[in-house]
Image (cartoon, rainbow, N blue to C red):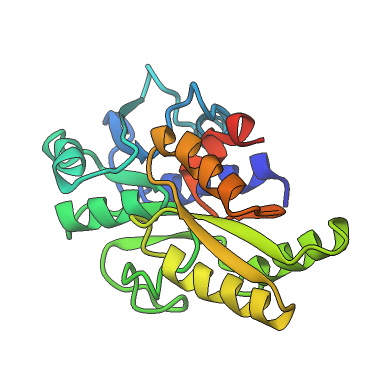
Amino acid sequence: MKRREFIGVLGSAAAWSLVARAEDKLTRIGYLALTSPTANPEPLIAFREGMRERGYIEGQNLLIEYRWAEQPSEAVATELVRFNVDVIVAWGTPAVAAAKRATSTIPIVFVSVADPVRSGLVASLARPGGNVTGVTNIASDLSKKLVEILVEVIPGVNRIAVLRNPNNPTHSFLLRETEAGSRALGLTLQVVDVAVPEDLEGAFAQMTRASAQGMVALAEPLYLSERRRIL
């Protein structure tokens, strides 16, 4: 599925959460994300298109309250709850966790969550329970595959680094997968923590000092928004 189509699914999920309401009522959506549209515009563009296709047009019958925070807190999510939004769309595991702590009644639709079950966001994939549901990009073998690709493209590689956000609860799971893949290939793995953009310069200095020959970045909205700088 193409990225734009994938985010369109999110718009569909949010729209279906709004079916049982009067046609003349202004629909309010809280949009909580880790990265601003300036850094990563495509998800929000696709989300708006998905809502528009289902008859929800911003400025007419749809109001979206936006909040951007690299490390969303319960206080940020509570602002959306106070606006009495009909549904909260949360992008990334930290954003979903913050929204879940803020409300147990307003529906929360998430996207870009590696493992909602291990993260404690839902009871199971088949029966999420509670007020949280959405689309997961779970792929338990993806991290190991990234390590395998590095070995293929860098002949003789024996030491690699992995970017981890210690504040992202799914990274503990993804890191274990990456470590397992590295051990299987006889590689030395250096874990480098990057939680905010300001950490990047120091992180690459660490890799240089350790003579890392390649790098794997765990799935993380921050790394997506900073992809040009990382490259």
